[in-house]
Image (cartoon, rainbow, N blue to C red; front, side, top):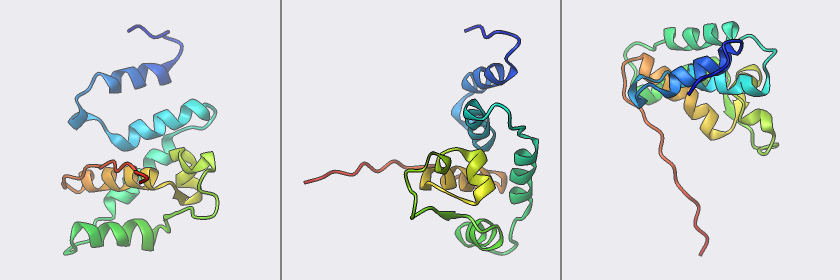
Length: 131
């Protein structure tokens, strides 16, 4: 696939898509996808925020306790129970700005941090089935 050289965002997304799943930086990928909706927003402050989250490893804590402390207690991330369907809840740029979002967006942040801490974390999809 060729992408116009004048669109570095699309070039970077294509390059990410050519990587194996294990090689993909999930946080960076989600920020790049978010920029498709908000091309005027520069990602550098958001990359720095991801680095800050990753640098905040909690010594002596289990992964779950460390993530809870860094993500929820220290940085105030939470789900949006009042306006769940708001599009900002799915855009990682806005999730970072607002510190709230959909479970999948918060999960991306947690996976990014857990991997930076040397842990293996993966997402699971559970479909709701009505009987």
